[in-house]
Length: 110
Image 1 (cartoon, rainbow, N blue to C red):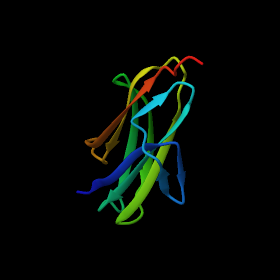
Image 2 (tube, rainbow, N blue to C red):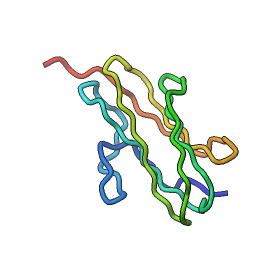
Image 3 (tube, rainbow, N blue to C red):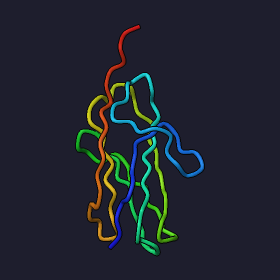
């Protein structure tokens, strides 16, 4: 049971809330957060799995402490890692229950 009721790639998380929603990020920026609000998963463990062009890069596990629980993870992007980035939210059974993507693209020349 349980679900992701809200999610966003964002530049920052303030007071447990995402600041903005990123669908495309230029490679003059190297830091990004992934925020997710979980419903009905108290007492369970949830994982954020970061992927780059379909390949797993890292995993961050969270213990869910209440019926409504907000968590976030982050990664540092190398400016040559252009392409599709994805975060999969996994339940305790390692099943993907939610996925979001953003594109990391070359910044315009100055």
